[in-house]
Length: 95
Image 1 (cartoon, helix red, strand yellow):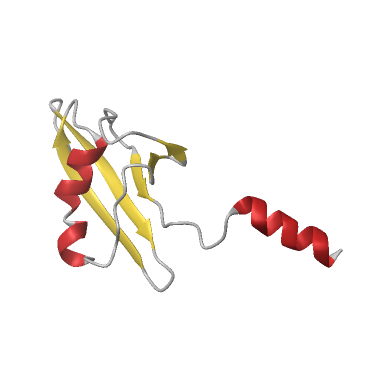
Image 2 (cartoon, one colour; image 1 turned 180 degrees about the vertical axis):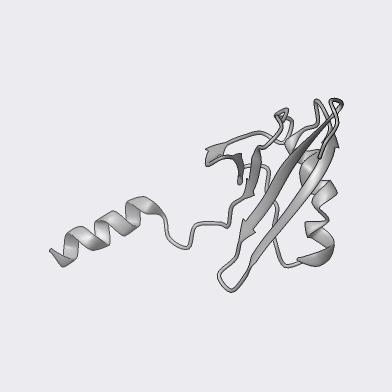
């Protein structure tokens, strides 16, 4: 259990084949970038491309400098396989 000077957050990445999840304890005031670094995802999943525009907290896009609160879930998103506009166009053509 974290003490008053620390927070506990989850860092998750859902890949097509498997999920990475790490619980990390950080000092209060830590950021998304610090949580990702502490999770050691780069060591255990070198195939994951961590791009600053593809991270969030509880399904809301967040900057790497975003401060975290106890219980937050940091999410690392995969690149889109298909542009959403193009996907809608294809569905519309099919009828």
